[in-house]
Length: 95
Ligand SMILES: *[C@@H]1O[C@H](CO)[C@@H](O)[C@H](O)[C@H]1NC(C)=O
Image 1 (cartoon, rainbow, N blue to C red):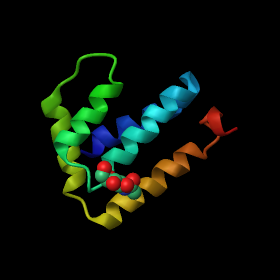
Image 2 (image 1 turned 30 degrees about the horizontal axis):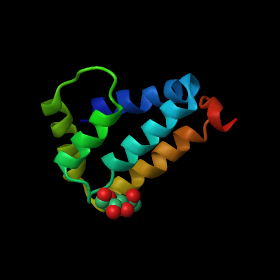
Image 3 (image 1 turned 90 degrees about the vertical axis):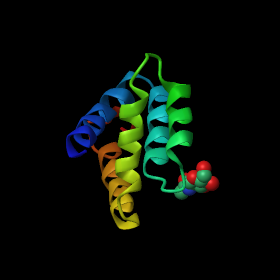
Image 4 (image 1 turned 60 degrees about the horizontal axis):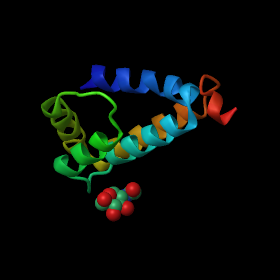
């Protein structure tokens, strides 16, 4: 779980750099990831709408379930951390 999250977050500045639409997709996926009202099935639908390549639906379900198992406090902290990444100088979009 922690390792996957680190990889996901490490990819964010690359997405911001690549294009602003990529950044919007990333924003949306992250919002859905940390929204405890979004079910695994809904989440799979959202990611599917953005994914250009095939991927493992079961792995995605596990990832979302990991977030669903966290407390609201932890989910809020993830949001704080993601915003810190967006505001960092490695994210040219906000520069
Ligand atoms: C969380 O998801 C629900 C259902 O899709 C949506 O109604 C709500 O606005 C979302 N909350 C946030 C904070 O984005």
